[in-house]
Length: 164
Image (cartoon, rainbow, N blue to C red; front, side, top):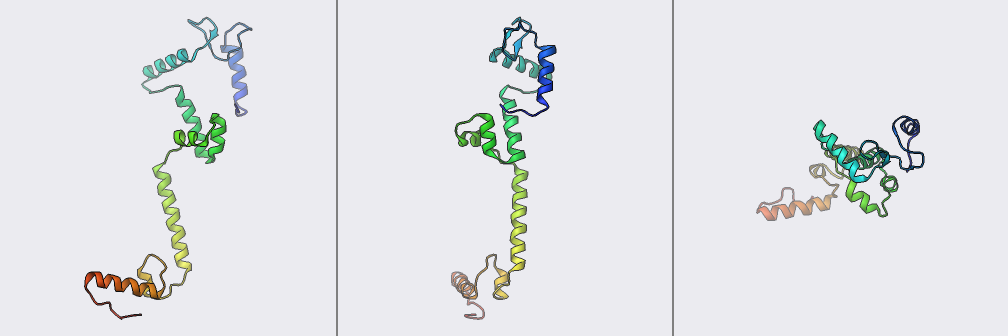
């Protein structure tokens, strides 16, 4: 598991000052009260974490750390392959299904960016006629005439200007 450089001094300090276990115990996390220095089982860790969460009024569970890491990696890098490797998933779809979330603010930013891009393109483009400016898409004059005829037929109104 890759870690950042600032992890190692903290880890070394933990081993030196807090981890009270016999030298032959190789587990990193140990139960120091009732476990008397034996390796900490997942169920014990989960129980202790939930207890702390209840005492502080926070809903917390061990997997929350994994979710937080995955979300942070995805938000900062945008690289789902990196998150997949860190989490140890065999399939990218597992990582995507579990950890990719659609953020409403990101959706709005994406729409604003798309709109700006479209507006820049429209300003750079010369329309075939003044009538084309009435339409969202870049229609040629012939298509505009066909559209106007279809609209007129559907509404029972004569198109103005005929075949322009």
